[in-house]
Amino acid sequence: MMKKWLATLITACILSILAVPGVQAAEKKQESDDTLAKGAKSAILIERDTGEIIFDKNAHEKLPPASMTKLMTLLLIMEELDKGHMKKSDMVTVSERAASMGGSQIFLEAGEEMSVDDMLKGISMASGNDASVAMAEKIAGSEEAFAKKMNEKLESLKLKDSSFKNATGLPAEDHYSTAYDMAIIAKELLKYEDITKYTSVYEDYLRKGEKNEFWLVNTNKLVKFYKGVDGLKTGFTNEAKYCLTATAKKNNMRVISVVMGAKTTKDRNAMVTEMLDYAFGQYETNKLFSRGDKITELELFKSDKGKTDVVVSQSVSTLHKKNDKKPNITSEAKLSKDLQLPLMQGDKVGTLIIKEDGKVLSKTDLVVKEDLQPASYFQLLKRTMQKIAKVG
Image (cartoon, rainbow, N blue to C red; front, top):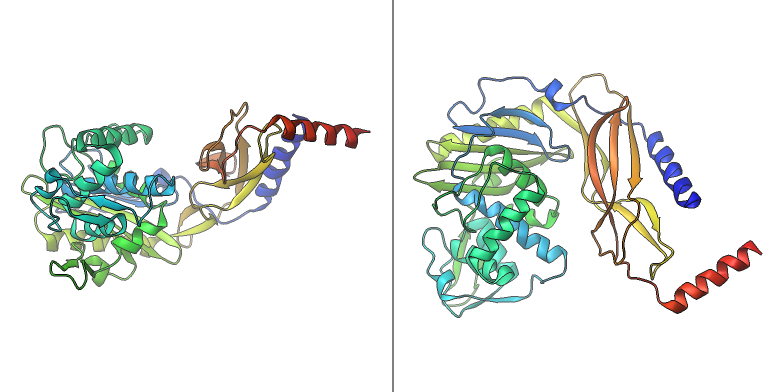
C-alpha cells in the first residue's frame, strides 16, 4: 500500500510540473451573441475536449432530433468495434424489416450481406435508415432492444432530456432530444477518431462495379464547403425541420455546433458556419494529453501481468479566449482503491483531474491499456518468493 501511495503521489507531482496555458470556467468566459443562430429553435456551440459551452440558445429544449438520432447509433457501433465485439470486415445480413425502412436509405435488399465498414459509410454519409436498422439488429438482436441500449447510454452520460425509440430518428411518440444532449453524444462519439474517416467523405460508392452500385453523397455539405469540417450528422423531418450537428477542427482545436429547427438547409448551414467562425475567431485550446497517452502504471500483485499502463480515455485540453492572460494549470492522477479483477481493456481505474489555481476544470477517466486477469497459483508463488528474496 505504501508503494502504491508513493507512486500515485509522485505521478501527481510530475503532472503538476506540466504547467500549461489554460482557461477559466466556460460559464465565466461565455459571452452572449444575439446574432448567432437567430433562425434556430435551439442551438449550442461547445469545445470538444473540455465540453465547455461557448454559446447556447434554448439548448435544453426538447425537440425531435430527426436523423441526428444516428449519432447515438454510430456511437454504439463504434463502442462495439472498440471492445472487439465485432470487426469492420464482419458481414451483416439484412432482414426484411431493415430492407423495408423508408426515408433516407441505401436500398438494401432482404438477405443481402454488407460489411460493417460499408454500413458505416451508408449511415454516416447517406443517413441510411435501412443500414441503421440492420446494424441495430446485428448488435442487439432487434431495433427495440437496440433502442434500450441507446437509452441506457443516455443514462450513463447523465443526459436526462432525451428519449430514443428507434435507431433512425423517424418520427415516433416520445422520441426527442436537445441541442445540449446532441452535442454531448457527439463529444462522446468523437473519442473514436476513426468516425471522421466516414463522416468527412463527401462522395463514395457502395457495391462498386456491381449492377446495384450505389453513389453516396454526404448529406452534410459543409464537409466540402467549410475548411476543417469533418462531420457529423444532418437531420430533417417535417416536424423537426432542418437540423445539423457539425464538428470542425483547426489548429488542434475541435468544436461541435448543433442547430435544431432551422427553416431551410441554407439557413441551417449558414448558422452553423457563423457559429464555427465565432469559435475559431475568439477561442483557442491547449492540448494536454491525447487519447491513449500513458499517465501512470497500475500495480496489482494478484493480477496475471502484475502491472499495466494506465492511459487517458480521451483527449484533454484547456480552452481560453485569445489574448487572455494564461493561468497556471496543474494535473493530478487519482487511482481507485479496492479494484476487483478481472479488469478489461478500457475499464475505468481512476480519474485525471485538471485544475486552475486549485479549482477543478475537468475530470477525465483513466483506464487500463490491456486486460488484467487473476494470477495463477504459480505466478503468485513466484512473486512471493521474489519478494522474500529481495527482503533477504
